Image (cartoon, rainbow, N blue to C red; front, side, top):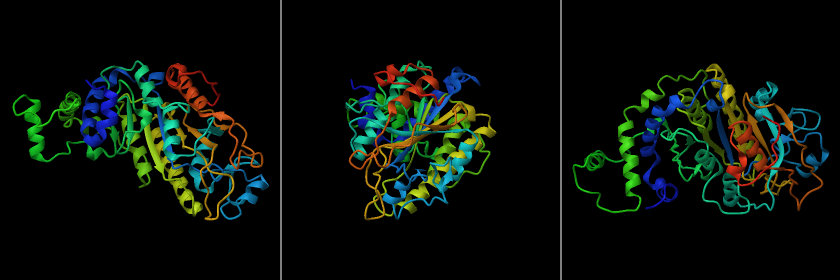
Length: 407
């Protein structure tokens, strides 16, 4: 018999997320009342935002007080007069005005100089490291998936985590917990033709031929399909009570956060969400692309938290960003930047102690042209796990890491 993790990794992508989603919503609805209680730790959830492609931290949190920044980036720098100053040395990219507004309301923590030892500059491996929290090994589960397995959440709630998008990220791959990948509420239905659906129904009801194939995953597929069919008629009712209080921007990122808000405000007991935005892989013509993405990022988060606040839910939703790496300090000949190391992370929400944490890495004391990091990203994860989700971090991360004080 194949394991559930093998099924997810090897088979669910081809099978299609929409089929599994309805099952999970139905089970979540049955378990929801066991999970949430306003004001309790159990009511909290985490939203993880992946800035895909390696976001350039130096043009995000701009060291406008350091002349070295303007010396090494003569064509792609952010002019000092345009920077949204946090203090005399650093400030935000002007396209992050919406995020700066949240920062000024003490809802944003800026974590400086975050990375990991023995870094690699591959997109694939870098993303895997951040999603598994394992720089020195090749783990088969993600750190959030391990949290879901260990969190002692109601066993019959299969809506413990949700990935917004067409694919399940490794961050949410678990040994015992199924997590759906949801791109669009309207897509929660059986994807096959009507005759295929009818045939599946006959087989599931024990009235028809067997599937014309055998597979070690067949039992799991049938289990998921059976619940999906039973739940499909209920799905619209599960989120029907939610109405957004703001007009979300018409970007995929903001619309993804709108779906997160719908699920949060429907109290389905979801603990971890995954949303992505990109690509920040700016080897050429960096400024227009990164500026546009940063604006989408900031405007989406502002709408999300305004909506949550209107529903009295902003204090129970923590948002954390990550990117597989930052960019090199010096700009290249194509007015872009190449793969680098340390970059800032953002943590947003009512549970955050707003402010800047850690020094900005030096622009002159470098590691072969790259910034020297000073904060291990697993310390950020440990702080979130223990300070927000209330579970021992070592059980999830496999080791102990220093907690920070941004929560």
